[in-house]
Image (cartoon, rainbow, N blue to C red):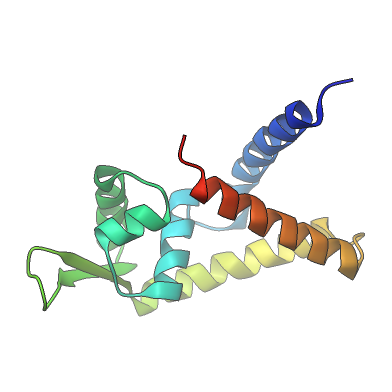
Amino acid sequence: MDAPIHLIEYEIALLVRLTTAHSPKLGSLDRSEYLLLSELEKFSPLAINALADQLLLNLSTASRQVAVLEGKGYIRRYPDSNNGRISLVEITPEGRDILRKVQQARYAAYADMLSGWSPAELEQLRDHLTRLNRDFKAWNK
């Protein structure tokens, strides 16, 4: 039998693949757009470097993703009034609308997929996923 870590690694890899495969059915945002807009919905406005740090992206990747979302009208960028060399980004009403539509589709899909789970099992899954993501963010090897 495989060690638990081997099975955990495989199951996480499979989960990422399966969620990526189903994403196009759940709305018009890809994974990076969804995560970036979700962060901005919670914490707008943010400096691009802070956004990159939150999502563990390098600055050039975050800047490219910001440019794409800005081009779609989902976010706006403007200079920081305290330091004009820093760009702040915030979600626009159009960005909030598309994010809500995608979130609703995703919530409905997850509710359907997990309909056989008890409330206690759902809470346990939520807690473990939250902890796993927190540990991934904190891991610096």
